[in-house]
Amino acid sequence: SASVSVSRLPVDGDTAGHVGPASLSWCQGPLATLGWSVCLGAAGAALAMWAQGAVYPQGVEPLSQWDAEYLRRTFAAALLAALTALIGVFVLGQFASWFVWRLAVKTFAHGGPTALFCLPPLLSDACLPAAVAMACVALLVFAWPGEDREPQRPQKHDFHLRYDPETESLRTLSYR
Image (cartoon, rainbow, N blue to C red; front, top):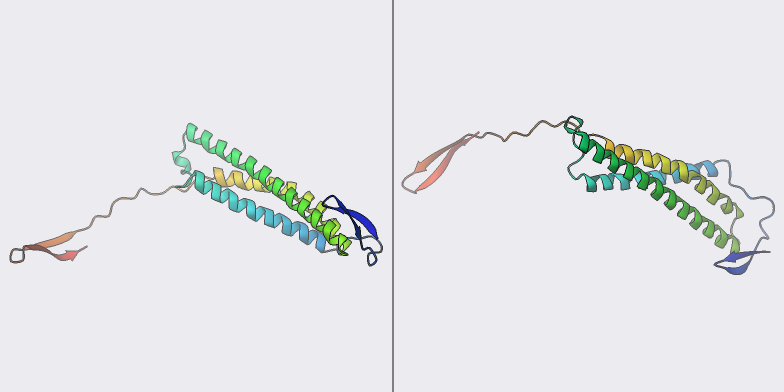
């Protein structure tokens, strides 16, 4: 039996089935780290693209239309988005790591596996590289110039109409 603290209350844990050191298997650690990085990256990329759509609803202007002021504003927005992504993804990852730690403590208190205690440090270690990668993605999403679009000219249509004096109306003969 071991004593642990769950929500600041001492609890006796059942350690009868847990003899010896605990660790994750050879594939659980790398898979957890990779999966965690991918989840953080997907969440951060989706948030960066949503924010870019909110800031630039029509998209970023093509590079040929950038002037010095637009360049300054675009890169200021991109740096702010990168900094926000860095802090947001790192804090989200640390919060989730803390949650997994709390889950490991409660699971252990109820006789669960001790190997779960190895997971929070792995997740915490993966937060900074994932956050830096997301900051780079946010920087690229915000600063990437749009494509040059050809100006849209109104379509020219030919209508051939005929006035019918008996019904006092116009009739369409052809349309091109």
